[in-house]
Structures are given as structure tokens and as C-alpha cells.
Picture 1: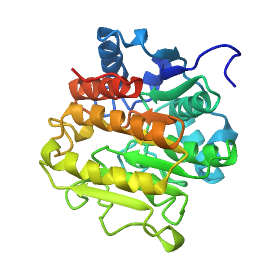
Picture 2 (picture 1 turned 90 degrees about the vertical axis):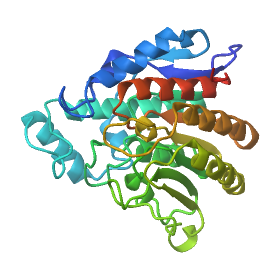
Picture 3 (picture 1 turned 135 degrees about the vertical axis):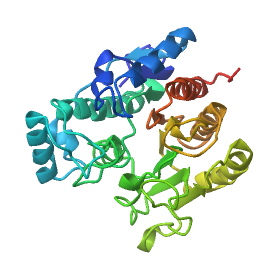
Picture 4 (picture 1 turned 180 degrees about the vertical axis):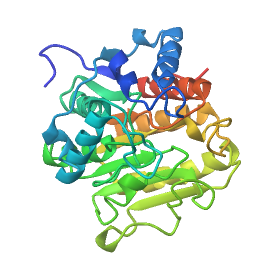
Length: 324
């Protein structure tokens, strides 16, 4: 719990050069410059004045096993030692040390969840995170371990939080989360993404709303190529009605910046202000529904300027500030 007599910060941000270790080389879209670009804009805005700074953490094997299969963890460990080949069909290289780098992403997301649950802060942000494509038994789409999925399992098993809302505004459908919990009626999902007919991973149709008892608890919002704020903002308003009906006890936000206009591998044209808007609205909904509890994870984004703007807009939104 929070220290006696200490008022919890409204928002905490996890910073540390070790987070930048999760990358796949200078020539890969998910390169080492992403953390540095985010950090430079964070410092330019002097957001440390309003956000509490916390340090990255390393996930244990038991943490990873909350979501991932034992055989898959052994496979990643072996490939990480060898440092060659791929962890999937060709998107996610098995560079030396990738196991520990990915485990640190998971550990930091779990530390963000713990900080909120322990009353250290009401909301938290971690930049190199939101690895939403990894499945329980496989890597995919630059994602080795699925910190979003681990966080959901940790909230249930360690914190007793059953009703979780997962919001994803990355350009790519969060398939590793969606299909792992497709029949879970206690996990509500809102996923804005580019229509899968035009972009990896090709999933996330509007008609996919959950399976069995979970039908109606998942909301996929596929956007056509070139969709911008004029289309997305009214759709977000409808999502807020859905969120209130779901009445979550904790909110997770994957705020990938590859949905912002100018990303080199996607086709949406949202503004970075959309990310700030979603963060502000989720903050208000969290205050209304679940004691303010939100953890946001950076996700994708391969235009460094977009990434820096969008993620820092999210932080300002979580802290309650306005986007200028």
C-alpha cells in the first residue's frame, strides 16, 4: 500500500534506458531510437513536474507464466541465447538477449499495475510496452511476450480484479489479446484499428463481439485506410456508452502511435491529439467507474515524431492536463 501520510500521485511514468533495450536492430521498424524519441519530448515538455517517475522492473518466470505456455518460454530462452533466426515467420528476430529485454517490458507493465493497485499513483504510463500480438504460445508482429495479457491475468489472480477493460488504439488489431480472451465475459475490449483487409494481422471484424457467454463484451472498430479524426471521434463517443455498460474495475490502454498520419507501415490518418483525447476521456471514465485506475502502454508507432507527440499527449491526458 501507499506510504502512510503520502498522497498518491495522479500519474506515474516509467522511465529508464533499459526499456530501450527492447528492439530488433537499427534497420528494423521497432528500432532502439523509439525510447529516446519519446524521452526527449517528455523532457521538452517538462512532464516530470506533474508525473511521478518510477523505474523499470524485470518480470520473473512466474510472471511470464501467468499468460505464456512453458514450452514457448523455453523456446524464447533458447533462441535468445543463440541470438539468430526468428521467433515467428520473419517479423520478430531472435537477437541476443531478447528474452530479458522482453521480460523487462512485462515486468514494467506489472510494476505499473502494482503501483496503481498499491495506491502509489492513480494512473501510470510505460512507453515501450503494449506488445499485443504475442499469443500464449508464439511471438508475432514484433511482440515476444504479451505484457497486456500478463497484466490482465495478474489483475485477476493477484489483485482480485475480475472486470477489466482493455482499450487498444494501435493501427493493428490487438489479436493476441482479443483471441486469448475471446470467450472471457469479464474482459471488455474496445479495439480501434485499421480494417484487417488492408493491414496485418488481418483480423478484428466488427462482427467479432466475443464467444459464448462473452458475446457483446468485445467491440471491434475497424477503420478504412486514410480515416482521420473526423471519423474516429464520433465513433469514440459511442464507445463510451459501451464502456459505461461494461462497468470495469480497472482500465488498460494500448496507445500505439502507428495510427497517426505519416506512419511508414500503416494507412490511418489520425492526429496525435486523438490519443490525448482518448486518454482524457478514459481518465474521466475511470474516475467515474473504477477509482481512477488506468495503466497505459505505448504500443506501436514507427514515425518517431508521431510517437513522441502521441505518447506524451497520453501522459498529459492521464495527468489531467489539456493538449495545447
